[in-house]
Length: 299
Ligand code: HEC
Image (cartoon, rainbow, N blue to C red; front, side):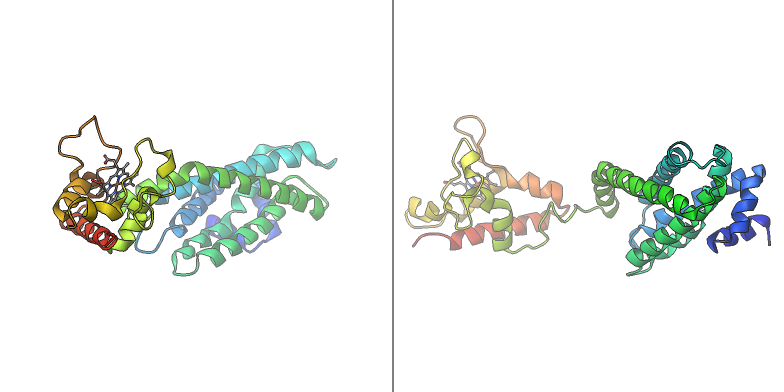
């Protein structure tokens, strides 16, 4: 077995002598770096949905895992060396980085988070496992006699790095949703209602302005300069006949010749088309909404 593999397994098995060994061996720095990178890559792969992986999102999650680890390492070093040193503590960044680098060995198992239903248990288990390994590594590298002190340093660093990762997630989350949208070729579900039913679409896209009953009293109506039309009177205004053609035309393309500038009503043809690649579906969606509006007419 190569030294690397033996150290990797030993570090994962929480063998203190392995941490002792890599602390002393300056040549182990590259190995420690490799462990960190592999472990981050495993996290990036493990964070994917099976069958929905994309290189971009693997790279993104791996980078987040790596940056979170670097944040953790940095914070731990600062706390361990500056805030809570023991008399014996010598601050050698190389020693600490080598030991805590190897402490990410259990994180290689994060690749199994890819299996259906395994994500939460795998990430939780490996997080605790890596924390224990980290405590061992810190105790070793900072020459702590008390394990309690190593626990304190790591726990504090852990909490801070979770906050750090959370902030990163907030920053990168939106661009991730974008990436997913580009990769599946479809919009994110929040943007388009997958249902083609007229009522569902009316409630989703029209009711905010026109109200659930179509009376023009939706929740955002008050904020509009032009009040949304009362859609229950379209038939009445047209001599008792529902002007289906006009409504369909208006909803799809807006007014043919706007009397005064543009209308305050969104034009839905292009909107739906940009969200949904199929023309037939766009037509169907609008036809169903128009039919639903007919059912709202006052008799
Ligand atoms: C952002 C608010 C808003 C949304 C969302 C909205 N409308 Fe409108 N709608 C308006 C306003 C304002 C008017 C009146 C302005 C005008 O006539 O130019 C109007 C007018 C209309 C008219 C014309 C009524 C008439 O008297 O000629 C129809 C039909 C209509 N909307 C249907 C819909 C349908 C169907 C949807 C959903 C697909 C929808 N609207 C979504 C604001 C909205």
